[in-house]
Image 1 (cartoon, rainbow over the protein chains, first blue to last red):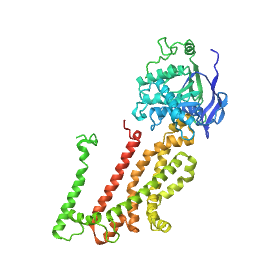
Image 2: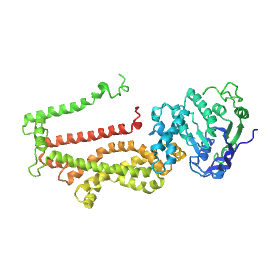
Image 3: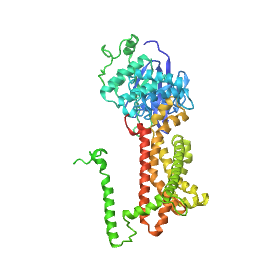
Image 4: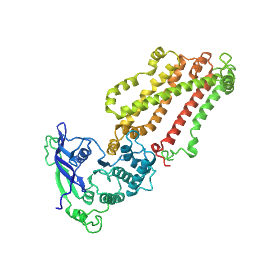
Length: 271
Length: 271
């Protein structure tokens, strides 16, 4: 194994329970800086619960979560960016306005709008970010005028402009058709590498999980009480580091090149 | 013929709506003609000539008692009451609807009260309004507000509550606080819905206006109709009703136009 980079996020013996229903149990997870973590698992195995937990939307009933060694507050904050499958962008704002939103909130607490030179600076930053995701020609479109793929590109740009410590993706490409999905895979891989992102992606697509991730987590319920299905929750049953990919990454080889993937499941374009 | 496909509103279809109106006018003219042929002093179904004559006195000649052009004075008085009532209701709906929609604590405290007010038949409150505000303008405007504001408040609140959770979470991960969330996410998305609620409230607003004017007023479209009813003056009532319909339709079209102009994103239109 390569020397371990700094942990961005760590979960220690985290449980999520609603009344007597156990959703997640005994989650121990350390996410290192620069890793691309894919989370897979059957429906109802707590993939989204794990994401909501890290997002701060739900608080753990037991255990501790730390972000950069600081206990995580149970609320959404700008240190964690997120892209959902749908509804990630604001339908009443143009592409440019959507991207500038994060900057405006930070710099103008009362009006949430910028003027003059500060606006021009924010606009330049937003345009740069939109160029990185390939939306530089669509600055003044509304989301309803764009395809699903373009909307997800916008959602990524909107999140990345805040330079989050960790980017959370909740089935981000699940609603896209195969060709577009392949483009998005290329895009997110490039952004991950260029910006040195730390990414946690929840997906139901196993090929996608292995093709993009440097590490694949599988959530499932290892114990089931047939008389009381709520008795036991899901936990991490497989934690697979894709070590050869990490080595390739270290050697700066192209990830999506024709070097042959080290993974048993060959990632074909999309599907 | 493919009935479902012929839903386009341009081309020859656009003029289809004229046919039933023309038919009703035609039927009226035939019936009025028959009755006038039997009785030259017919009052119930006057011919257009009689209407023009009666209205001419109200539109073009000063009233000998008050020295006013009654038709225009009636219109101005009614539109002022209606305008004030609609403006107040819209303001109330926006502020309270937003607070109810965004703040769960506010909703828990005042939601039941708003519902309770909304289920009271407004006309039942008219005596209370007359006793409280006297027989002047205030009571009439207040009846319109009491009549339509609760519906509009609830509509806006429900619309804000139904905004996707993902949008709220996304805004929070972009650093938005509650105030910025209200200002930049909830308020702009409430605006087109507010205009829609206002358009739907126009009908009831006219009902309450005419009712209030019928009971206690000395000027106004509703007052005039109920005044001349004593003389069976259908030659005044029918043109007045047509004029009210025209005003109502005009306001509705104006609001629809404004909404499309100002909130193109909500109407799925491309620029």
